[in-house]
Length: 81
Image (tube, rainbow, N blue to C red; front, side):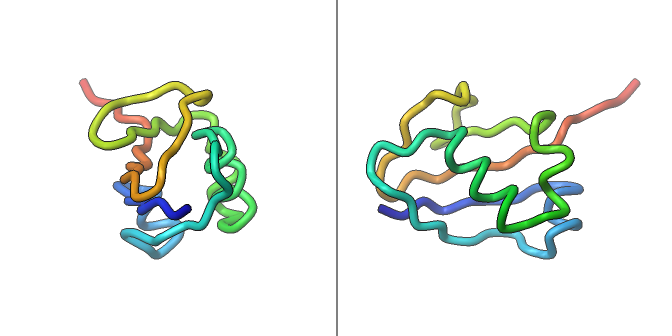
């Protein structure tokens, strides 16, 4: 199966991509995807625990199961005052 991964903010700047398609095995979780992305983009690995992931426009936990053609947004922490 394949998912479309969208990168935002500092994540997009660090890896130099705004989006990519990632192939996964069936029943992969968001945590599985995060591990693959960390391995693929070494400069992402250090901060992966602080990232939020949303699947099809909804924030999800790391144990959420992904499905073919899901859209996954990788969102860096947001701060402000």
